[in-house]
Every structure is written in structure tokens, then in C-alpha cells.
Length: 432
Length: 164
Image (cartoon, rainbow over all chains, first blue to last red; front, side):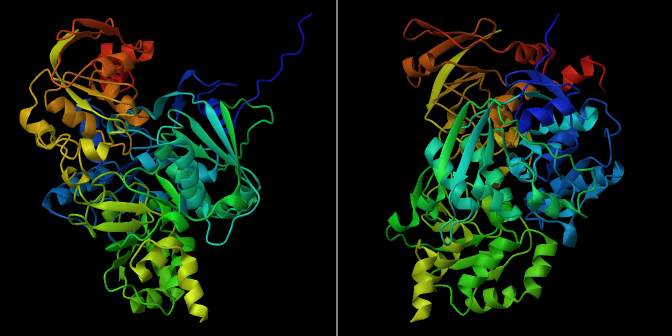
């Protein structure tokens, strides 16, 4: 008599992928074809996908509710060429009657907009022709960045080929120190494992600190999985996830979690009591330092925004630090609320008054300066502190410019002091 | 398929911003993109690269953005093959999907100097350094990737399978 077959234990990533491949189970290393819930493109990547879609003779996207196009990188249109790219995207969205196409006063930075509007949610498989698509792992989805040809094929078939990734588990214990956020945890982790430390792998974030982390903080952490080379980042859905997606997510949420005996290729533990705000020095996100150890580095610009750190919680921290203060006369501070809703909510809270009185520029939602696109480009030798995700050579402008990555608290404090600085330096002064 | 050319060498973690900076992403015309290929890594590259030339790089080539403009600009500049110690995931995927030949071979990268003449047998995964008369074996290309290459890229592969 055959014994009872033991059910294969799986990680959350394997469970989501198995379900979408129509299988009972999958294991790391297997090649699968998975059905996707959402395929996403932007004004840079979609035009190539649209051209490939047409070249192959396709007439209709597989599902008009599941192909999402968001022109957010060079919008408001930066020049004639980018306006032409956006026009291609707009015409295709109209022709295909896409449910989710936003522009003008309705558009936001894609990875802030999709969770906010409930277009992506727990249990989903999402691909996006944008490397920061991994953000949605914060909602308990499998989400990964791909290129334009992958997007084109997905728009036709509704499927994508994947190699099931191995999973690295990161456990965050203890409690967060003052001014320490999800951004610091992920920067510190990238600093430890390097920019290819999670290459081809899923990064699963767990532990008591993650349990207490806000949805904004979770999205920030998963957003930067790609900066460690990761295929995806993921946090198992819990009450915080349910509260966030309730009355918002447009499909039925499916909550997966890893089995207790699931296989991990590596497990890393962090005592968060030992982590202080982090700064990634030029020119790689892995060059992390404690903010107290950075030394005196004068700066010319500060960006608070992007798909990494341009949500309500981020603006709230910035407002708290900038209240009643002035931005250094040597610094241009650009605040970029990432969606129209965040923009309106931040204004209602009175934070715009704080930012404007401090001397900040408030930008409409755009990816703009993060990728050196427009709306805040750096000149030769200029330095910026940014709450964005990459500090590669020339990322934000001239090839000799420098980007220092940080959380919004460090960015706001740096704007006031005109050098890379921790928020304690500014908040202590206030007490005097 | 055999390709032959002079080698351009690059270091570790060459990101897609250095392969094709975002300031040029307001177009997707391959010829335009080729004009600024590798500009922030080596401004001389696009001026002097010749048809058939080979790029060799250290680990994690193509990290960062998902922009397919990166492999498109490399291919359009005439480069016949990229050999690196390892590739970032999206760049790896994009290259197979759109038809830029790539191989992983750490020994070849270490044993080759800029300007060396190299011949690559893509089928066998053999890298022959003509200048130094040394042969290296690249990591085998996974069977599914070979299938994609055989079909002529992802779009032709889905068409072949009757998915369009």
C-alpha cells in the first residue's frame, strides 16, 4: 500500500506561481507558463511593446481590464519626442478601450497609483515593463519587472514564462529606532548582500518589525528588491494588508503565506535596534553608511518623491521636520507627491503650506528627476540627496553629478542644513 | 552561428543608465539609440565600435532599469555578442526575447584584454581568443533560451505556438 503523499511545502512565491500556472505545486528552478492578472507599461516601455504587438499581427489585447498603461516618466510631456511617445500610448489605450489608462490630472507614479486604486492586490501575478514593478509584493502579490517584448507577448497571450525563483528570507526582529523606516531596512539589506546579492531570487521580508510596518513602508521595501538584483520582493498579507485593500481592490484577494517548512536558499536575521538611518553613497545602492558616519558633504538639491518614497507617510515625515524651518539657500528642495490623491490629501493636511514656507518646490506627480528625465536634473559636479531608488553614475543628470539615497527624514534634514544630515541634528536645534 | 570581432571591456555592475542614459529614452528608434550606446561608461564607444565587435564585462551586466532600449542600442550599434561573468535578470531576459546574443563566461572575461580579437561559436558556447590563442567554454545556454533563440525571439515563439 502506498503511503499518503506528503503535501509539498512551498513559499508564498511558489504558491502564487503554482496557482497561476494551474499546478498543485512548483519548485524553485522549474520553468512555468503563468497566467497574469495585470500587465503594466509606461510611456518609455509601452511604445516598443505596442510596436511589437502590431508587428506580430495582434488585433486585441487579451483582456482590456488587465492591461494597464501609465504615462508617468516624461509627463507632463517634457519635449516633442516624449509627447510623441505618450501619443502612441494614448492612441493604443483608446483603440483597445483599456479600463486603466490615466493621464493629465489623473495620472500618478505607476507604483503608487496601482495599489492606491486597487488595480493590484494580494495573490496577484503582475508583470510590468518597469523594474520597480516588484513594489506590489508589499501587498502579498508576485510582481516582477520585465522588458517591452515580454509586455507585448503578455498583452497578446495573457501569459508569461517564468523560472520559479529560489527565495531568500529576511527576518527583522526587535523594534525600529527613531527616524528609521522601511527604506533604511532595505538599504541596509542591500548594503549587506550587494546589488546582485539576490540575483534571480525572491526576497521574502518577515519578522515582528515587518508585522508592525505600515503599508507605505512595505511598498518601499519591496520596491527596492530589484536594487539587490531580486526578481521580486514579498511580504505575506496580514491585517494591515486586509485593511489597506478592503473597499479598494477590484478583484477577490487571495491571501497566501509560506509553509513553516518551506525551503529557503538563505535566511538572514536583523536586530533592528542596531539599525540607524542609512545613506547609500554614490554610485551604487549597496554603498550604504549610517547617516552619523557620512561626514560633511554639501549638497545642491533634495528630492522627496518617487515610487520608493512619495506616499503620505513619507510626506508626513518631511512636513514634520520642515515645519517652521527654511531650506538652505544653497539647496533646491523638490517635493513630488506621487498621485493626485496624495497631492490633494497632503494639501488638505496643510503640508503644502509647510513645504512652501520652507522654500520647497512642489511638483506634479511624475517620475521626472528620479531617472534624470526632467523636472530637476543635476548639473556637472552637483550633489543630491534623494528618497529615490538608484544612485548610478549620471542617474539624475550630468555624468559627474552624485546622488545620495536616504529616507524622507534624512532628506528633509539635509535640505535644511545644506549637507547630508540626520534628522536629530535639526530636531535637537528646535528644542533650544 | 559564429561571430568575430574586437573586444570592448567594461567593469562590474554596468547599469542600464550607463548603457543608455534616460535622457535619450524619449525615442525608441534603434539607430538613434545606437548613437549614444554606452555613453556614460565610455564616450568613445559609439564613435569607434565596429560591426561584429564584442562587449565583455564583469559581473551583473545590465543591472537597474527594465529598459529594453539597452539591448536594442547594443545590437543596433553592431555588437555581435555580449559576454559577462553574470547578467542582471531583466537584461538577460530582454536579450533573449529580442535577439541579442549573450553568454556567461568568467574565464574568458578574465583572460581577455580590450582590443583582443575574439571568435564566438554561439551554438557550442565556445569563446576563442584569436589574439592569445586560448579557448574558453561558456556556461551552457538553458534549453528554453535556445528554443527562444531558435524561434527568432519571443514574439516569433508565441506566434509559432499559435498564440496570436
